[in-house]
Image 1 (tube, rainbow, N blue to C red):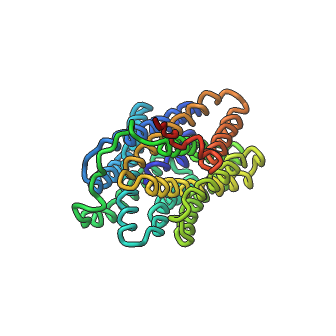
Image 2: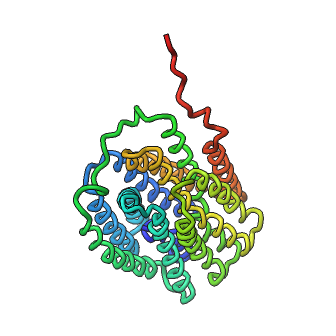
Image 3: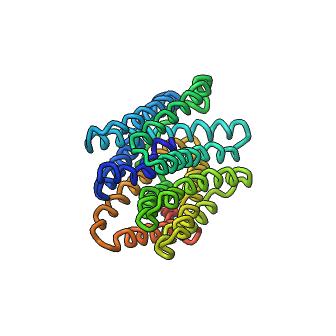
Amino acid sequence: MGIGRFAFTPILPMMQDDFGLPTQQGALLATLNYLGYLAGATAAIWLRARGTTIVAGGLTLIGATTLAMAAAFGMWWWCALRFVAGVASAWVLIYASTWALQTLAARGRPALGGVVFSGVGAGIVVSGIVCLALMTVHARSAAAWTTLGALAFAGTAVVLPALRASPPGGPVASAPKFAIAEAGREFWRLVLCYGCFGFGYILPATFLPVMAKSMLGDPRLFGWAWPVFGLAAAVSTLLLSRGGIAGRPRTTWIVANLVMAVGVCMPLASPSLYGVIASALGVGGTIMVITMAGMQEARRVAGAHAANYFAAMTTAFAVGQVLGPLVVGALARNRNGYAYALSIAAVLLVASAVLLSKSCDRLFAPPPRVTQ
């Protein structure tokens, strides 16, 4: 899933060199992927299929669409593939998270959720290192898509036996019927804050290598931005799983939001290799931490409806990450376009941290009952 969702980020500078792809078209491709993610997350609210079957199908689609990106059939071909990859990625995240977290909870090992979420960071590291190696030898973007598509299929082949061995009931069963109209205010707080996270992380997660390239130029330097981003994502969740997150997911979410806000601003504060690496560490080191903390908090609040909360939160997240590239595309002609977009992202992350805190509990408390 890490390859399917994030391989485009380090490959984008290669596609710009190969096809003269302007920033607006790069933003469009990113937006189509995020629109697919939104469509997949929305559909997941109503899907009533075996969770592990959806995960297996989503992983297969990710491998196929990644591999097919190597064919230079034009912009509309790439847009369609990125959209389908987005749908598949949303299904994998929602249903794999539900399956894994519920299984771990049933076995008394909830802290191992960090191992599950570190997989996304591992996929980012792999995609970054592959692209760095290929850029060093001046390979074309098609070679990167082909290599990463093959690796995605190989990873899927490893996972499928475990999915097939899962029992038909229990942790992989469909969630009970859930009506959004009846959801409480806490539901909407989590959804809103997760949407702010989607906008806040997506700008560096999509354009950090492009920004690094504009600052540094040498692929041997700017190419390291994405592997560092992925390594921080993988290591942070592993460290958190050792320290334990299940008992304090909301506090973890608040702190990680503030760290990410600092990371988002680092390329503005220091437009250099140090600023890029600091941004990669700050954003990469919190992206999966917030994902894991958000899922844990939703599970704590929602109980049996956790999968429905996951789907609604992921939908809001997808809306936020759709808006991010659109904002960059709209500001692309402005010399300070990236600076304005990153500033907006940082403000939303800080606002989300405030909304999650106890100081805003009164805004989301249920209205007092009126007695006759």
